[in-house]
Amino acid sequence: MRISLAIILVLVAPSTVTDAFAPHHVQHPLSIKSAFSTIKSPIKTSRNNANLSKTACMAGVAYPLDGTCDPFDPESSEFCTVAPEEIDGSLRRTIRLAVLFALWYVLNIGYNIGNKRVLNALPLPWTAATVELFFGFPYVAFLWLSGLRKAPNLSFDNIKTLSSQAFFLAATHVSGVVSFGAGAISFTHILKATEPVWSALILAIGFGEFLPLPVYLSLVPIMGGVGLASLKELSFTWVAFTAGTISAVTSAAKAILSKKILDGKPMGENLTPANMFAVLTILGFLFILPASLMIEGPAKISAAYTASLAAGYTKAQLFRLLGMSGFLYYLYNEVAFLALSEVAPVTHAVANTVKRVVIIIASVLVFHNPVSKLGAIGSAIAVLGAMGYSVAKSKCKPKPKVA
Image (tube, rainbow, N blue to C red; front, side, top):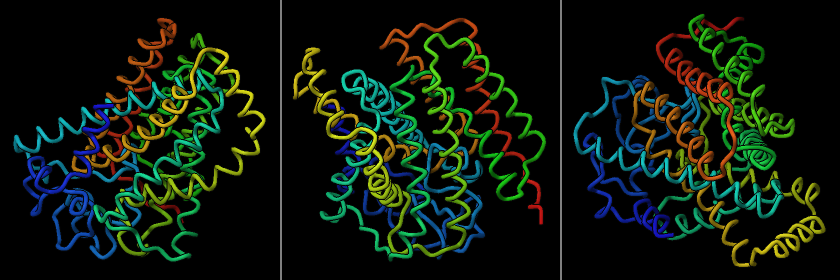
């Protein structure tokens, strides 16, 4: 709890507190109001030819809404990154990013372990996923109403445009939680590492866009590693495998839609990446709520709740587990934007790889999941393959779109 309160202070503190962590190339202190504000002047980035009237801004870095990258999902392999030559290598920035990366890893581990504990206590994955999406609303409502962050101003047409992304965000989240509940956390994260495979497939089949050969070759170890890990996964279930794969597919679809649907389209006012995530989370909650009530209705929830109390859990424990899981889910995404918004492509790839490794190791240590030698080798191959994909993609230009 102390860690969570400290993180809140870092994220929503006034500029006098957060100025110590502001990067040198930003001309104003890094606060919630400034770090996520609409960009006022041109900032040189790897995409400095973009029309700044169609950009999203995070931590003083402008990202184009022109279909070249996804500025709204920092953990995606399609996320907008900064050219290495444009990065400020000062000690101040290095310390700031080190702190943010540490927080991101801690929150990620906390969410994954907390989510699994929720599912162990209450085997209701749809309900848990719905509650976790809901928890973003009171958090951002506080920021918007207090003026710590400018609230987005969206038209009904804007919301309709974003509805497909919100659907895929909700599908990604609930399928991931279902996979968590049916198997080991480590296995779900190995399956999620297949996202690049599905991205390449969707781009080729859906949009006629083909990647360079080195990028396709980097997909081979991902598929081979996941295959080996699945065959030797001691806690393997078809529900975990199917749901984890769906989570990877929908995550890839959401990232591509962020690039394609928002290709140069104006999207209201104050729709920064952080506000975009908030809007998609709220819309995703509305999408998932009816399905959750149909699949796990009041009767099933009541029966699971009664069984949990009979197993020794208290009401306070159950509500605390659910609350912290939802809070950590939203908060780790907030910190991810700050941690990954000004790093180079290779750094982004390595950071995501380390995140997966840290979560897998932590989950195995906490829940004592048995791991076979070949399963561990397959997992390592798949995770390193995902990093290789991101590195290869950042260094190879895609082939022209097929007419």
